[in-house]
Length: 117
View 1 (cartoon, rainbow, N blue to C red):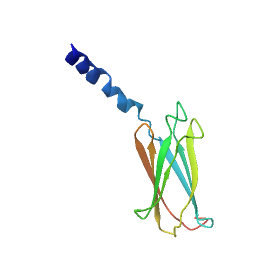
View 2: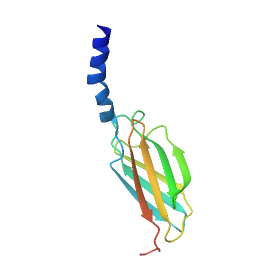
View 3: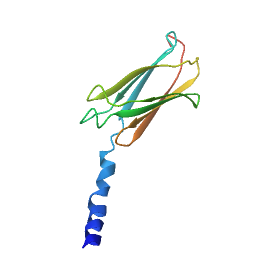
View 4: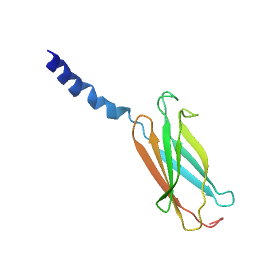
C-alpha cells in the first residue's frame, strides 16, 4: 500500500513542481556611464511577494562577474527593479542573470554605447 501511495505521489505531485517555477519573463537594462549605474527592470509576476520573488541577481561585465546580490522579497507584484553600481566602458558587454526563489532564471545583456547613440 505504501509503495502504491509513494508511486502516486511521484507520478501526480512531483511533475507539478516545475510549473511553480516563475522566472522573469523579460529584463530591461539601462546603463548610465556618467553615474556608473546599471538600472535593471524585469517583468516578474508574483502571487506572494515573500514567496515568489527575484532572489538573486548576478551582473557580469565581459563575462567577469562584478556583482552578486541576494534579495528576500520583491517590492512589486509585477516587476523587479534595482540600480547597481557597475564600471564599464564603451563596447563592454554587461550581462544580468536573474533567479526566481521558486526556480527558473532569465539572462539579458547589453553592449555599452556612447551617450546619445
